[in-house]
Amino acid sequence: MPIGAPKSISTCKRFFLEPSSPKQRQYEALRAYFAEELPSAQAARAFGYTPGSFQVMCHRFRREPTPSFFVTPQPGPRSQPKKSAARDLVVELRKRNHSVYEISEVLKSRDLGLSPTAVREVLKAEGFAPLPRRLEEERPDRPRPTIEAAADVRQLSLAPRRFETACGGLFLFVPGLVALALEGIAKSAALPGSKMIPASHALRSMLALKLWSIEHRSHVMPHVADEGLSLLAGLNVIPKRSFLSEYSSRVGHQQIVDLQAAYHKQIDGDGLFKGESFNLDFHSIPYYGEHPLVQCHFVAMRSRRQKSVLTFLAQDLDGRAFCYANADLRKGEESEEIFTFIAFWKRVHRALPRHLVFDSKLTTLANLARLDTMGITFMTLRARSPSLKQEGALLPASAFREVELDVPTRRYRFPKVYERAVQIAKRTFRQLVIKDLGHEESTILLTNDRKSAKNVITRYAKRMLIENALSDAVRFFHMNALSSAVGIKVDFDMALLVIASGLYRQLAQNMRGYADAQAGHIFRDLINMPATVTVGASDVTVRFHRRAHLPIIIDSGMLDSPVKVPWWNGSTLRMLA
Image 1 (cartoon, rainbow, N blue to C red):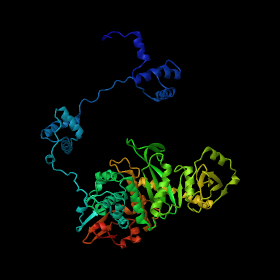
Image 2 (image 1 turned 90 degrees about the vertical axis):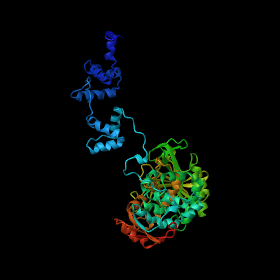
Image 3 (image 1 turned 90 degrees about the horizontal axis):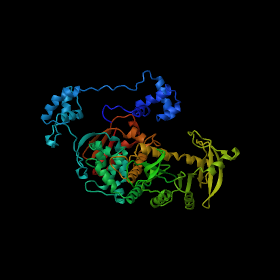
Image 4 (image 1 turned 60 degrees about the vertical axis):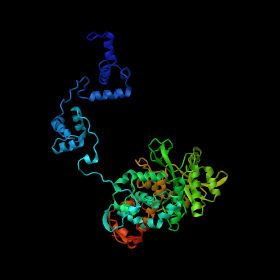
């Protein structure tokens, strides 16, 4: 249409009936409702609104004191006072080959604060090209990040000196690490090593980071300069994150299984794993990348299915430490993993596990008959199918009997139980329907345990220990930290979790009042404290700084027991308060 030519009547009509801007559409719709008195639903439909959103718009219009629809936008400022005031100085400094960051610092010192981005915009407007990358010696002399030495056991210095370390509490684990004899464990598992970082030193370094609760391996770098952490590992400096990622990828699944087996054999007789009863569970570790081999599993903490690494964990009831982990699982292998654990335990301890407790989805009903045939006592939840729910609902109150649990601190101590025998895979089991156990619906237990119903229910109530341990592992050992910038093989990380949790439980047994404490609690009170380290001719003295819980460490007797450390060339560790 030529400029200045009149619009047709139909075009003008469409301007009002088919508004082009949102504000005009609101105006025409409200005008049709209030001025032309169209019904609300008809006005909303004519201008593309839902009835509900149109009612909200009318509600707001009634309460808005001065509604505006055709406000002419005011032009913004045409000048930039800060840039204009600093323009001449910016140009002068650039002619002296100063970078945008250096120019920004000079401007701030003269109260003409401009960010590097704003300086870059001024220079671009004045026609200056970016400076070429300068050599290190061409840069101004200012503090820069230091380049730490590479980890090398041959560079470890035990020369007399004194230094402060933030990781002083980690030296409480040295007696446990000496007892583990990691050199033998690493050799049994055929872990990789080098002349610079032998296998035992690599394992000790990664354990130290696990014990210190470092969430992501990319967070290792702030601790590289801590002499205490490197001395604990037996190296001149702690390995950097690139080594940690590369090392874990060199450890195969069979090596990880052998590592756990060698760990069990080394601590056999210490009483950490009594092997009387075990809690078993699966845990899905969420994964947020695009790796094609990671499958989707149900993640309880997210209450949905998403990409995750499925991990099987076993916890010793008495020791309360994880005794087995396997993150090398694929879909369809879940139900057989319980027998993999049984085979592992029999190979290492020359006996079958005596008692297993797990939930309904850990294995199949047919596998329960296999466990019974093997002579293994088990206890599991039974899935609440509609028929089982109906059966429980039809039971009269007189069919239940009340039992008292020997747990004085438990809120629900007097549950009611109904017991009967059931046939599954041609085997007879006990089925217990339990009410008033703290759940809205009845709990259905399936077991071949012939103990009294009171003892069976009391034991199942202790299954919460593995739930608490998993929660502690997620929060303190950062089991779910797969989003780290440094990739660590999950299966290997789970093996480190098993050993680290065992070291924490062994330490807790020596501390009065901490036998049942979780790792996070122990770390906060006893481990997370600085110390002064003095390296002598034949000993290493660690003097802990004063802390509120230091008397607990003193009362444990650990400070009165010097220990010779093989990876310090036989030097003796002495801990003082």
